[in-house]
Length: 218
Ligand SMILES: [Zn+2]
Image 1 (cartoon, rainbow, N blue to C red):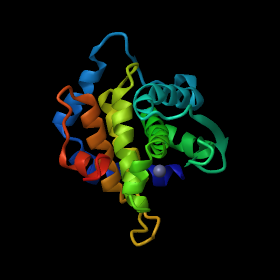
Image 2 (tube, rainbow, N blue to C red; image 1 turned 90 degrees about the vertical axis):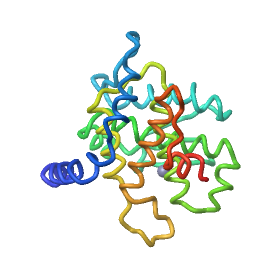
Image 3 (cartoon, helix red, strand yellow; image 1 turned 135 degrees about the vertical axis):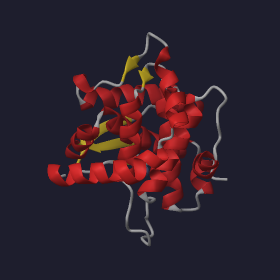
C-alpha cells in the first residue's frame, strides 16, 4: 500500500474505530498476559517467517490440539488463504510485509486467522453451522484468532500490539457489503477479534455479546 495512503487510513481508523473498540478494561485484561516473566513479547526482529512459525506452532498446541486438527503446512504463494483440501496455508509475501509495517501483531493476527480456518475445517460442524455463509465463517475465524493469540503461552502483548491487531482487523474489512462472499465489515472484524482476545485472556473467560455472536455463532 502506498505509504501516504496507509498513514492516512491508519490515523483515520485509529481515530474513528480503534479508540472506540479498545476499551481500558480490554487492554487491562490483555496486558495481564504479559505479567509472567518467562514470556517473550511478539517480536519481528527475526522476520515475518519466524513469526508465522511461532504463531502456527503455538496455535497447533492450543486450539489446534483441542480441535484435533492435523499438522498445518504453510508456504509463500501469490495470495493469502487457507486451502481445506490440502490443509495448507498460503501467505503472500508483499501482503505480509505490508502488515508488518503496521506491526508484528498485525502479522500475527492474519496468521492466527488463517489457522482458525484450519480449526473450522477440523471441526466439520462449525463449517456446517455456517451454512455456506462466508461472513459467518470469516468473522468466526477473526474471533478464534483472538482466542488463539491470547492463549499461546509464550506470546505476550503490549498496548501497541493490541491496538495493531484490532487496527489490522479493521483495515482488512470488506466494503463489498452485498457480495455473496462478503467477509465482514472492518468494525465487525475488529469486534470479533476483540471478543476472542478478551475471552482468551481473562481467567473468568468472558463471553461477551460479540463472542457469542462470532465465536459461538449463537
Ligand atoms: Zn479468512
